[in-house]
Length: 433
Image (cartoon, rainbow, N blue to C red; front, side, top):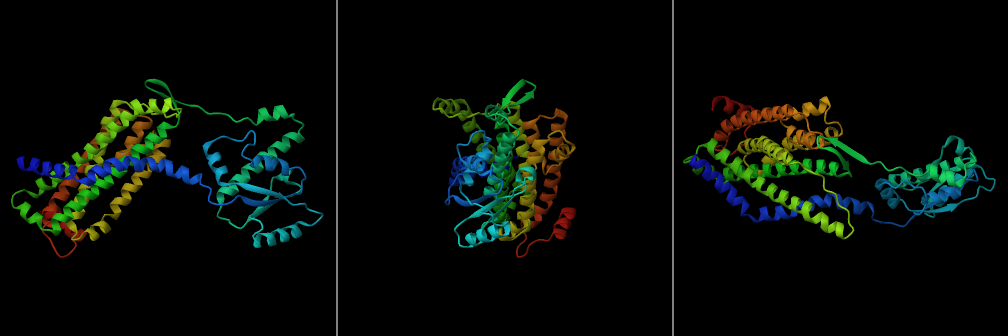
């Protein structure tokens, strides 16, 4: 036991004192915040001039409504963030083109020629029966610009709705009232009563799943690198002379897990400090920031399921490290592990939508996906305690099984050099060791 604690202490102290630990502790929260800020800034970037779109209004009624619907100050436009972002990506300069008793084929041929000459970026022909059937064709030089096409489609819908109300002899005041958007206020009903949800719950669910995924991936790679390094430098031969292989492997796993928990605790304290003081400071400057309420039990569940996920994947990483001879081989053999971890992370989407469904139940019981799936269920709609306990029992039971297999392969594989161990050989070691 004394040697086990010595290995744990060495792994913990060595990695906590490393500059990489300090850098990742500071930079990772900033990188995570950029995941929310940078996409929004990119969506609002104006990387080109407004699109020149010609409109052939064969109805004689729609051009004015369409022009108003595409203007930034048009009344009665839906005010959601998604629509505002889409309108920012689709700026238009409309040009009305008179039909002049020409056929549609002649008009299309002239406009196609202007497109090829780059005098226009696109054109729309509104047929005479457009108000009745709503069929319209949009031709442009960039078919990959789906955002602009969506903006134009939404503007046409608003314009045709306005004209239909006019033809139905609805007065302007009534049209304004009919077009006024609604505001949906979400209220979560939990054990503590009603609680307004301003969208922070989804951000919390995504953040929890992402932190779990990133931490397990990062520290699993640390275990893989440490095992391969000891094997390449033949330090394992010296260590095995004084420490049992299982003790050495467990010391590494526990020591690195304490490093991970230390880093997560620092992030948790920083998040709590921001929730207590930062929100008030931002509110004093007119910036609204809402932090969802997190029960203390959720922190305990987070620690337990993080340890579950860490020991499952870190033990597999240790198994891979003992089977390969170089870091390159280790990276190749670890790709299936990363794929399983990525799939388990993306499960937070269906699980967060329906946390009580049979699918959510089974994936939260599966040990490889439970660390993310069950934690998402706890955050969104806490399941009965017996389900949480069963998930932990199944998960840690799987951890013990994987550790038993890994320990038997580890003691032989760490002393093998020159070639990568095949899976049949590893299974034979697990049976014979």
